[in-house]
Length: 516
View 1 (cartoon, helix red, strand yellow):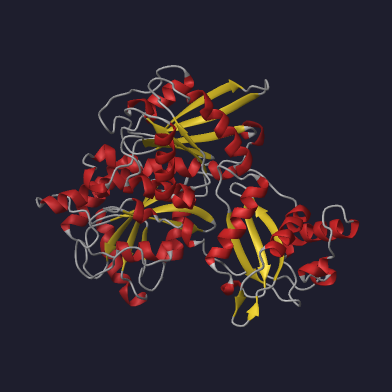
View 2 (cartoon, one colour; view 1 turned 90 degrees about the vertical axis):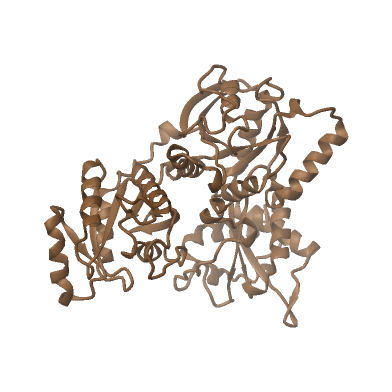
């Protein structure tokens, strides 16, 4: 359950053209931010995920701060940087070493020192000891310690990141007793689709301020909820009501801009997302991007078509048309159950938490390796892998390596030859056989030859499958049918599977969600 703790946020700030975006790209290991030798190229915030010494963090690249700027664009860039500073757990302030100390640097330093966040002062563009005198000049700002770095060549960045790592909020140890049975539910959607109204309906009291003005909810607010199920058991939830996410050109106030990253973090914390849509508006472009973020983060989901009562004359044909249109526009989320509701009048809202429970069960489902391979073998007999480059693909073995969401690995002789459509076919067969409604499934294909041992971490599951095969309890065919030899599976040198990117059909980026 440790995955649900909030992800720390690091903001990179400084005046324009000091190398903030270069450092950002260095940390997130991508070319996500545009880097040019022109002041003010980064006009807005960029978000990226990074692995900081084994800990996942969110890094924010900001537009340059011009403390006393009169230009409207520079004022907006300053505002964006101030928002990032407010949201961050730690701040990296970047100076330009060769340019020396400028008045803007002094104003930025004073602004950051007035805050209560840990700040790390990085003097950039320092390429070796010959530039050390350039660093010393910045001590006149009354700050320290200073970290000489070269963001372009990675010099000194490890020392800087080690210091930042030490200042991040401590990771809480997993408290299984506290989290056992607790389902974290994020209510997600565009502004004014009825998220707060729905939460009030579910908890039975006016917990949230409700207004028809979009953006009334500014923060992500946690509300505990307990209920009795039909079978008499007790269910515990943590309901997370989030501020609505609207497209950037409509986000006008600083407070509203802050709410966007908090919505991202709320989705990250959740087990199940209640994804609210306005029945009158249908699926908008922003709804599609929000859905993509939910899938990318691997969260279980229930789609709620709200304000159903506000539609005109309705019949079964109307419902069918709405559902078909919704599924066409959210084709990558066809696995999510859909419920038409009215949060205001309570229509069908009593069914929501039952759907949440079922989605969470499927989200946490683990299939034994023996049973998985028995079904996998049957699937291959019904629909053989395609022929690639004159030979048929050979698939040896499958295993489930993770839950929340369920993640499967298939070993075959040519992973690159497994077309997206066949992967989707396998995912759909797994979903149908084990009822994975409400949760995304992840499927990876790895290369394996007869001389390659299975990964060490899978030894026990391989043994389980072989033992089941020998006993003919779960697996009716011999392990050789999968191209596995017992000595290959449980002995041999440790083999490390290569990194494989997620499937394209569940790929949406943070940047895409906030693009115009």
